[in-house]
Amino acid sequence: MTLYASVGPELAWYGVDVEQCTLTKQDSVLLLGNVQEAWPHPSNRYLYVAWSNGGPSFGGTAPPPAGDNHGITTFRIDPASGALEPHGTPVPIPSRPIHITVDIPGEHVLTAYNNPSGITVHRIQPDGTVGSEVRQLAPLDVGVYAHQVRVVLSNQSVILVTRGNAPTATRPEDPGALKLFDYKDGVLANRASIAPGGGFGFQSRHVDFHPSGPWVFLSLEEQNKLQVYKRLPGEALTSEPLFTKDTLPNGNQPRHALGTVHVHPAGRVVYVANRASGTTEFEGKPVHAGGENSIAVFRIDQDSGEPSLLQTIDTRGFSPRTFAVDPSGRVLVVANQTALPTRDGKIVPASLSVFRINDEGTLDFVRKYDAETGPGRSLFWTGIV
Image 1 (cartoon, one colour):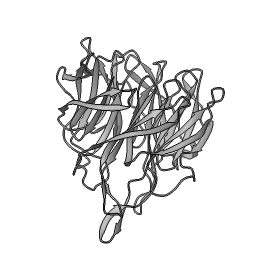
Image 2 (spheres, helix red, strand yellow; image 1 turned 90 degrees about the vertical axis):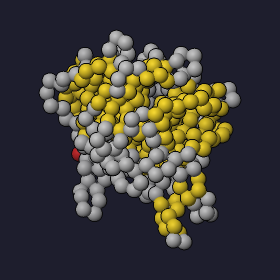
Image 3 (spheres, rainbow, N blue to C red; image 1 turned 180 degrees about the vertical axis):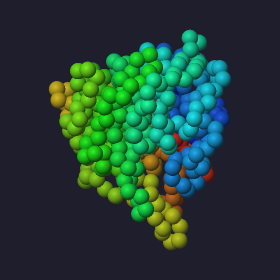
């Protein structure tokens, strides 16, 4: 079992000992731009990595938002060690990719783009490399600021999670939505747009699926909410959530935002990342402004799909943008994205925090591994194969 984690353009791999909850760094490769997201082929023989020299839409020390070099690189995964070997030629794509996935039979790669919002589909060739883009037959409703794309387990529909944008002093709010598409042989067709309240106050970020029940779990980034939707016959979703739950014990709080969401492989619990990485000035220097960086653990009712908060546990770092659950469901690893100074004069580095998953799905912190970051480089993505 191998964990992959990226810092800027470097993608490293680690051996995972699930009994001891340890990570052992093996080696790394360099991409042509900062790693944005990666997804394995269903066979686990290949890893598809989306990269870009562009950055998020906000400023700071991140790379310029637009960038001019973006692509998908295919790596062959060594079945014994998890080592990555470049396989074929990187495929150019039109703009910064924010998420990538592979359809259920492993025939196509789907990529989501945030600015401008969009989606592309590329064929996977018999040798596992990424091939030509699939031409779409009609314009697609891609909303504002796509943040994730997922293929429903039936392989007959696709969900594009569009976040929208929070209002600013000079710009009104852009609504968010779940964009549903029919899907066949790489071709997408508009089906429905799920946007409670017109999409306002609905900054949808990431979804994950229950492995056996008809439930879709959604994180709302700025609202700090976990929502549950039901998959209906005919590849539809309920237009309103079945349940909406706070991910912070004291409800929605300023300076917080949600990250990704993952359902445990057994479907008993669902995990959501709470992030708080804002800064404030203290003694003339920027320091962490406070707030909770944690994983929220919810028990899932196996009859109704209703989540109930069991635990929130500190990630021992700042901005847990992504985290991964091993396929056996025994270890969870959090990527604390960024280094930040605190009021006591210390700098808390970016890190990989390792948690043991208990029988009921709750987490125990075991250890963490610090990561060296810097201007324009953060611990942006992690995943386990």
